[in-house]
Structures are given as structure tokens and as C-alpha cells.
Amino acid sequence: MTTPFRVLQRITANRKPVVPAGERCEMCAETIADEHRHVVNVEGRQLMCVCRACYLLFIDGNATLRYRAVPDRYLSFPDFTISQGEWDALDIPVGLAFFFHNSALDRTVAFYPGPAGATESELPLAEWGAVRERHPELDVLAADVEALLIRVPERGTAEATCLLLPIDACYEFVGRMRTLWRGFDGGQDVHRYLDDFFATVSARARPGGVR
Image (cartoon, rainbow, N blue to C red):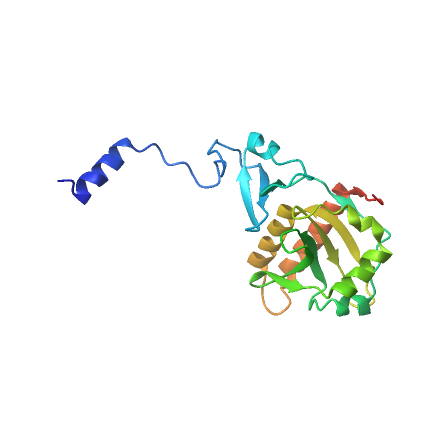
């Protein structure tokens, strides 16, 4: 008769050394470095850490696939403008959000940071459509895997900033904001990180153009 104790003995005797979480491909279990690529599960809206071989299986953005590779593209849109009234009409309560096209829902969704992490906001389609019509250069955005990060400073302090980033960079950004958040408005650490992040990403981005 096999007892739970004997089962535990057998498992303990035959098991391989434990590999720390985050160091194996979530598709094939191949060892991966700390710096690795990601794919998006389109239906589940989940990021998966993958090796290069698995990543390359999903780089065709025109194919109908369950997973899509997250590209490494950073673009800036120096001519982008949005008025405070237009921003308010999007029903986003803070001056920062990232926008991406969810192909499973066939619509654009927005997320904004806060003390609990990323909060989803359903965009008024007419208002967001008006912004896109005025800025056709934004239509280079790849569905599910890239996002537009838009920052609208406090009223009258500066022009809005719009950057195209990989979706994993956006989630990492929001996650870092959550860990630093203190009080009602985030605190000094959040504002310092926000300025540093935009400076770093803006320096990396190349100017975007009309497709």
C-alpha cells in the first residue's frame, strides 16, 4: 500500500534542483536570463516570459494567433496636443494613462496608475475617436502589444507628452508607481520617478510618423 509518506519520499528523492521563479520560459521551460522578452496572451490579457525561440514564433502581427510577441519599439510624437477639456472628456481622473487596442474586445481601453496599481477605464469612443482623427500618426500602434502613454501635466504647466511603448514597459511602469505610491497624490518619490521615466524613455524614442 502506498502511503502519503512514501509518495513524498519518492518525490523528494527524484526531484531536480528548484529553479528560481522567473528564470524559465513559460512556454517551453527553457532557462532564460533576467532580461528577456514577452508575449501577450490575447484572450487572457496576460504577459508571459519567454525564451527567444518561443518569442520568434509570434512576431507576425498580421497572423491570427492566441499569443503575440511584444516588440521593442519606442516612438515619440512631438506634435501631439490635447486640451484639458478633451482630456476631461475621456473620463480619466488623473493626468496620466496608457491606451491600447484590445483586439478581443475590438476597442481601445485605457489604464491609469494609482495606489492599487493599474485601473481600467472604458473610453468614450466618440471623444477618443476625435483625438485620433486629429492625430493620424497615432495609428501606427500595434494591437495588444503596444500602448500610447499620455501625460497631461497640471493645468497650464506644460504641453502634453505622448509616447508609444511596448505594453510590458507600461505594466512595469505602473507596477513601480504602485510600490512607490504614498498618500493622495503619490508623494515625492512617485513624482520623481515619473519625471525620470519620461526623460529616459523620451531619450530612447525616435520620432513617429504617419503610417
